[in-house]
Image 1 (cartoon, rainbow, N blue to C red):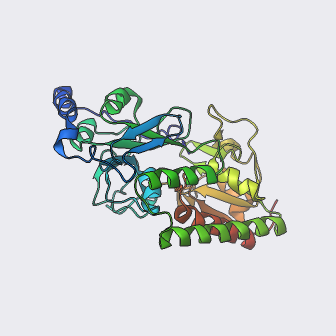
Image 2 (cartoon, rainbow, N blue to C red):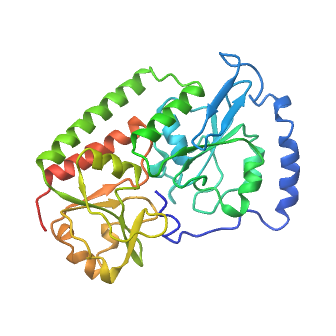
Image 3 (tube, helix red, strand yellow):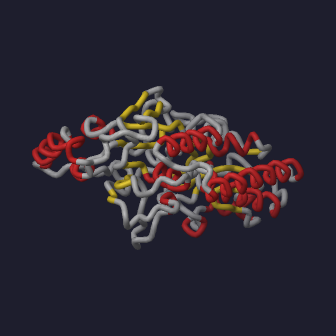
Length: 343
C-alpha cells in the first residue's frame, strides 16, 4: 500500500545533466525494436496476444511480450504464476543494502534482472530504454497511477513501451491475485502447473483456518506502520489484504479520520495511543521502523499490545499471488490464536 510517500523516502533525480541527449538516442533506437528480434513480432499460439488491464486498456501484439519490465511486487507475483525469463528489468524495493533480496522481491532472482531503481522516485529511464522493453507492468493502488513510476519522468517512460496496470487498492485481495493469474496466463504461464495448483490449495486452506480462528478468538487487531515522526493506523476498508481478512472475520481497528487517499490515519507519536488493540499487525517493509527501533518511543512502550509482546509482522504490500499470500494468512492466524485480550 502507498505509505511510501508519507514515509518521506528520498526522491532522487533520474537523469544527470546532459542525460536527455542520450535518452533521445535510445528513444529513437526503440522505435524499430520489432526489426531487431526483441520478441515483439511473430505469432502466438492463437495468432496474437491481447490483454485488457484494469484501466480497461486493451493491449495487443503479434505475440506475447518477451522483454518485460515490472515493479518488483508485480514481478514477484508473476514469478509465482510461472513468468520468469521474460522479466528483464525491475524497479522498486529489490535489494537491501547488504545485497540480499528485499522481502518484496519474493522468489525473483534479483541478480538476474536489471534494477532500474531501488527506492521511491528512482527510475533510470536511459537504462530502461536500453532494455528494449515490450511491456511495463505495475500495481495500481490509486486510479490511473502506476506505482513507483515517478511523476516527473512518466511521460518519457510511457513513450518507450506499452504499460499494463493491475488494481491493488480498494478491492479485496482475491481480485488482484486473479488478475495477475490472468496476466500471467496471457503471457504463457501454465496455471495448471503443480506449483500453482499447490499454492492455491495452501491459500484456500489458510483462508478457511483464519475464518475459523477469527470466529472463535475475539481479538482486536490494529494494522499499523511506524516512521520516526508518525504512527500510521491503516484502514481495513481500503487495503486489499485487510479487506479480505475482514471478510474472513478479523476484527480490525478502523481509523476515524484517514489522510488523503484513505489508506491510513497518521498520528503524532504523542497521540499513538489513540486506539487500543490486542495485537499490532506491524508493517515490516524495509522503509518502516520495527519494534527494536521503537524502544525509545514512550507512547509505543505503553500500548497494551506492546506490553504483552503481541506484535506480529505485516507485509503491508502483499505479493498478489496464492504463493505470496498464503503465508500472510497463516501468520495472522497464528498471531490471533496465541493472543490474549489486553484491552
